[in-house]
Length: 188
Image (cartoon, rainbow, N blue to C red; front, side):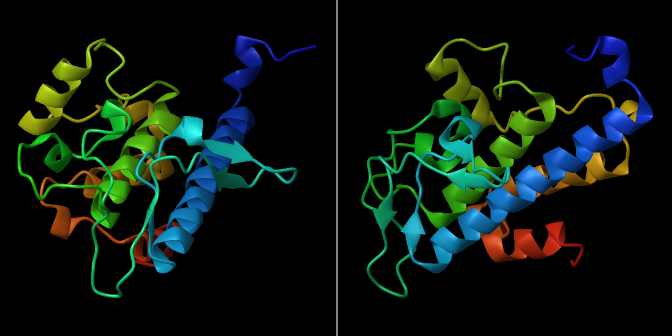
């Protein structure tokens, strides 16, 4: 018999859900760190592009917009800046700057949006239907809003804080995937 709504509100059920969310986000961060360490920019990171293996470990998939960075010093890809999923795209990808393209930092921004997606169980900006409106709001600095913190608890708040770091409007201030892994493993 499937659990009732009441069962899902039991403190152990809530704690288990938060544990699963944290584990999924930590596993996703490990995958992103692996890609970036191998000079790969995913370019379309979101929950729909993550599958779970037999042990429920998340695996990043759908590499259709992925680009390999060929030099040790280059941090950008040659993919089209407008390609991808608007709800997860970094604000710099919506600019008219010819040099704006997918980067490690834009992957980190998408990772932050994926945290919000996992924690809220909704797409980012669920109230918006049109890509142009999403782009306009993202460029203006609008970001997802967490559920009331009083219900959520410290682990949930910490994950939202991490997502907010990933959404920094200045790409150079976003944490790298390795730093995200360290934070999720309990280090700072």
